[in-house]
Length: 244
Image 1 (cartoon, rainbow, N blue to C red):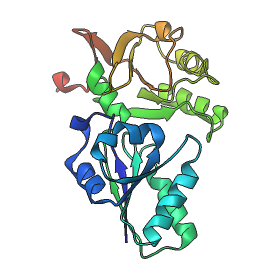
Image 2 (tube, rainbow, N blue to C red; image 1 turned 180 degrees about the horizontal axis):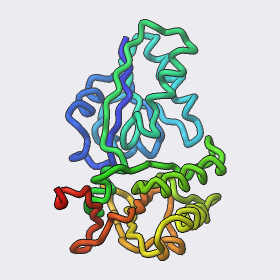
Image 3 (cartoon, one colour; image 1 turned 30 degrees about the vertical axis):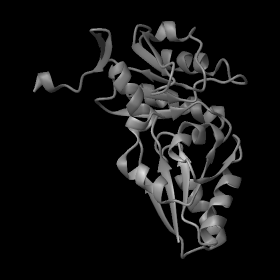
Image 4 (spheres, one colour; image 1 turned 135 degrees about the horizontal axis):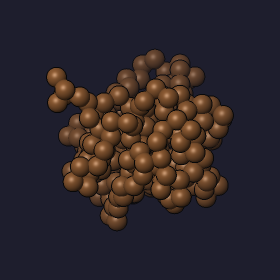
């Protein structure tokens, strides 16, 4: 019995790996968040699909494990990379509850938002960096704030996932204010919305300007460090090669 956990990247076909496409083609059932299934529905012409809304991730994984236990080859879809804020970890946890040791899980990596946003903005993650989600649905804001401050103190470039939502409209502002206690206000930053999808937009600005910027859940934000600068309208973080 086989269960794939597939990262589909940002959404456009050219950024799916060949391995991801093969796993989807081989699967009899494809399960995912309804928005992500819509992104690949043209790859599923005669495929059985199941979708669940946001906040139903556990139910989604249980459906997948139960289908695999019934003998179906199943693919669970994640945007970006399935192992980075994706479904891979939860699948292993749910599988352990079912004690379904005869199910073979294969995690198929995908292009995550950090690397795809960085490519649009230039090369801001060429040295050490941290990835931090601002969603406090599963992580308390106090913990998120501490991670932001410590990452800034350590000099990491910081990639921010889930920067804002209707209920968290001021979270990016709060995050920037924490980082501003450590970083210079003219630190180069940028964000990309709808990466690899129709309507993709991006913007480069300073940390001080980012405080007032309005973004949404479809945006990925990158905050540079003291080695980040703007070169030809692109963010570039130096790794120090020119000093060797």
